[in-house]
Length: 323
Ligand SMILES: *Cc1c(COP(=O)(O)O)cnc(C)c1O
Ligand code: SF4
Image (cartoon, rainbow, N blue to C red; front, side, top):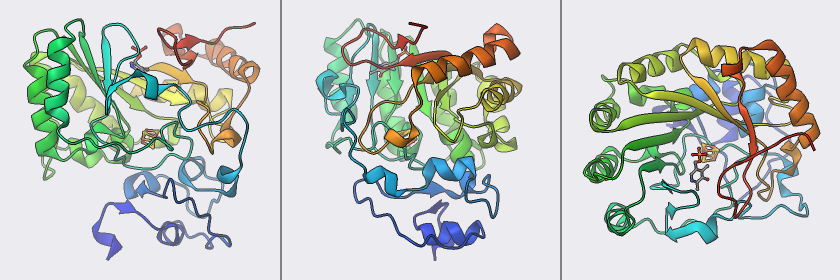
């Protein structure tokens, strides 16, 4: 029975859980399936078809619209890929994709159309690459969601990274504190907490969580962050601006305060990357700037996220400023 897994793979089951009438049209998107953790779904309001968290993961007909300028590799990852799953765009930092698995499928994901490459032998390939690329001081685990890697694979990967003298910082980009917090629980079978403890003993540990709406934060995420703080981890958040979900000064202000109450500082607020099928989530730069101004007027400076966009070929994320 579906109940035995912590994930919803069928919309029908999710709608029954949310006490919503089944959608009349089934949106088929064979390239990017529906998927969400039960924990994330438990934070949606029952009976509300417009719940912001539901909208983050609900496939819609709009995804099938072809819009000029939206493509399968919007940020030029293909060109920066040194090896399957190993990307270097910025000085000193390498971003790795050791898995393509996530704990939910965010409909606006810029990697949604990314081709699935073979990640065979990943740890050995990264080991060899780092040995010949000695100016890397930070390894960023991304994906997919790196915390979804099977534990033996994750341990093997970390053991290799920790053995590298040149690597001072290990950064983890993950959504699991709000989607699958169980895995941080020391009592959970297959808990990743001992692994993170090991990392924090040897390197500077940075965890960049991805939260788009304040409703995603709950007691379980607070506990995860509390435990990570015991490891002296630096805790940051990145969000993507999404029409109809968080394009409101009040919502973004609440998000900043709620993150801070759980020990996390806002880091990046991304303008949407132009991946195929996400155009309906986009808001203009002028609107985005207005929203950030609104946040700035209501929160201390350290709770204002940096509004950025990723432009292929640039040496860093690009700040969005008034023209
Ligand atoms: C965003 C990104 C990083 C990290 O950039 P920071 O500005 O250091 O957060 C690193 N590598 C790639 C490929 C990225 O897309
Ligand atoms: S968790 Fe990240 S990589 Fe996975 S679907 Fe969501 S945005 Fe994309």
